[in-house]
Length: 110
Image (tube, rainbow, N blue to C red; front, side, top):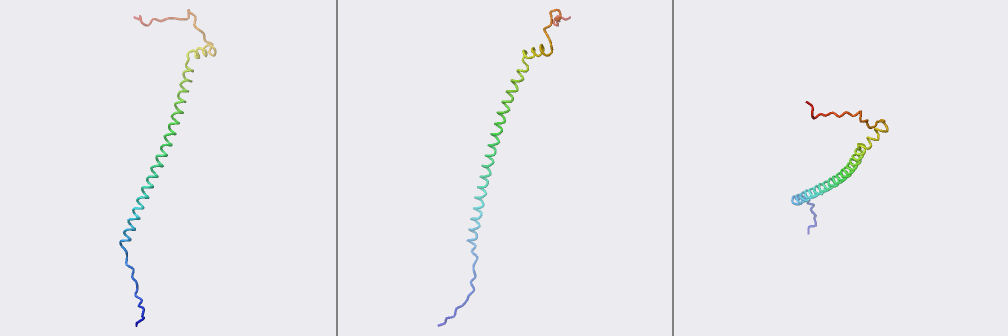
């Protein structure tokens, strides 16, 4: 019997099917990852806009309160009783006498 061992070089064939399947799997994984990242980005933007809307609502509420307070202050400053009091006390004004009042008739002018 012949006990010779032949060392035949082993040539590995390229498995194109496996390479194609791995490429498809990798592309599918990248697509899922991109979709997930887009979804997260979209949710973060929605959350940020929600915060901005709440800030704007709070600012609007503050401005409406300030506007109301300023209108009340304006009305109190324009009240005839206050103006008359300032005229009498600070400016030393008084009601005119009847002899100082001249009534001008503008309707019957010829």
